[in-house]
Amino acid sequence: MYFFDEPFLHKDLAQTTASYKACREAGGKVFCWFRREHIDDAIRRQIDIGITSGWTELDEIEKFHKLGHKILWPVAMPVIEKSLQSFRRGGGLTWWRHKCDGIHPYCYQHGRGHIWNDFDHEKHRDYAFTYPTVDGVIDTLCWEALREGIDDVRYVTTLEEEIKKTSARKKDVADRARQWLNDLSVATCDLDETRAKVAEWILKLQ
Image 1 (cartoon, rainbow, N blue to C red):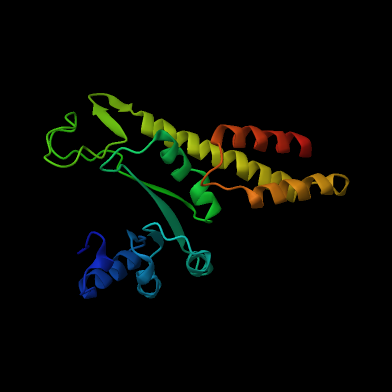
Image 2 (cartoon, rainbow, N blue to C red):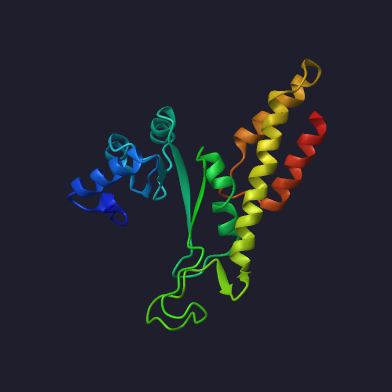
């Protein structure tokens, strides 16, 4: 089958569209990255899982969800290293707030020469959240930051479940917890303090 990398950046999608159809007829599913302006094309081609390029409009994301499709939030190793907090935030509360279905880390392991040499490319370091060994992998602090982000989402989704099933006796507490979640600024909040506060709300509702 014929697939473009990042296909919606190309003018002619005929071959890729045919490949998508063949894949789907064989029981497979299709996912790819695209920009916001490509979303209607992606819907027409029945992309099962879309990867955003950072656009956050909830109405556009809802278009996908209404058709039973999913949207992933990209978390990429940058050319200039970001702080670990940015990986935790992007791998956690950011995609939760924008009602995405998960994350798409790029890249688990992408060596630009020798995977164990970050300096063998004239411009970029390796995009690698982990490094291979003969019998496994060695993870990085960035990979651990993603894990922390996923744990943050586990905390807030647990709180959301507790809010949903709360009894009438604790309705006032549930309402205050819901409002606190709605007001939470995922772009600026202290992530450790936020997790502690979420745990506090959970215990109040139990």
